[in-house]
Length: 82
Image (cartoon, rainbow, N blue to C red; front, side, top):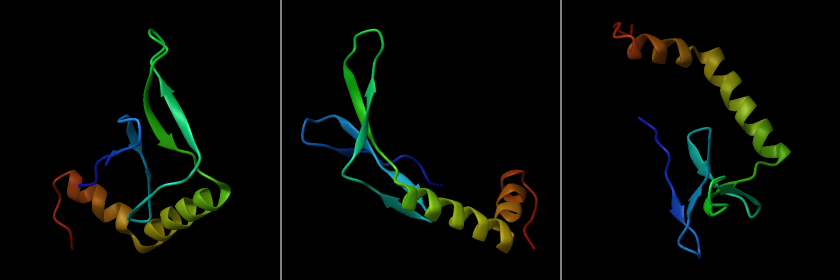
């Protein structure tokens, strides 16, 4: 199972990367995640560029075309996978 994999940045704040086509991807640009109650930056997240979006869409299409999404859904629902 894949889960979020934070990396700690220079300020000790969690930094979240993107998961694209089975790999963790990071970028120089990032979004600040701000707690609205305190206005404190609680984390940062990688900011996707158009090439990241294209790669994610291509990976999703490939997964759909190979049937991996259907097999994964059946597995999660407890059905046997042929």
